[in-house]
Structures are given as structure tokens and as C-alpha cells.
Image (cartoon, rainbow, N blue to C red; front, top):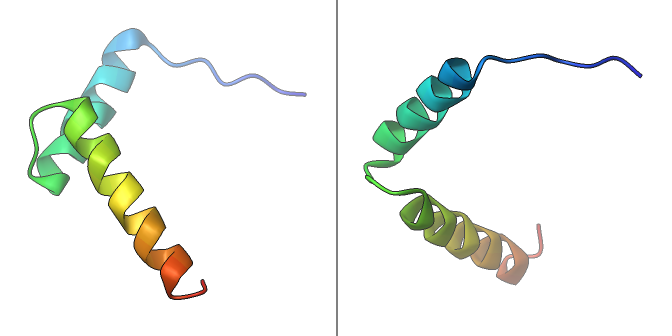
Length: 46
């Protein structure tokens, strides 16, 4: 398979933008949101 090489700074920038869009400051907060959404989707049968 092919490999995708990303600079550490690129990954940090993407994570920072994702956190900003979610309105949180920490990765753990984003993980909590993801878990809540996943639970909601399961309950709705998606």
C-alpha cells in the first residue's frame, strides 16, 4: 500500500482547527463529544 507522510506541524494544525470547530480546547473534550454522538446514532439505529 501507499504511505501518506504528514509533518507533525500539519497534524497539529488539523487538530487545532477541529477542536476550534467543536468549540473545545482539549482532545479529551472532543473525544467526549464523539462518544456522545456515537451513542446517539446507535440509539437512532444509524
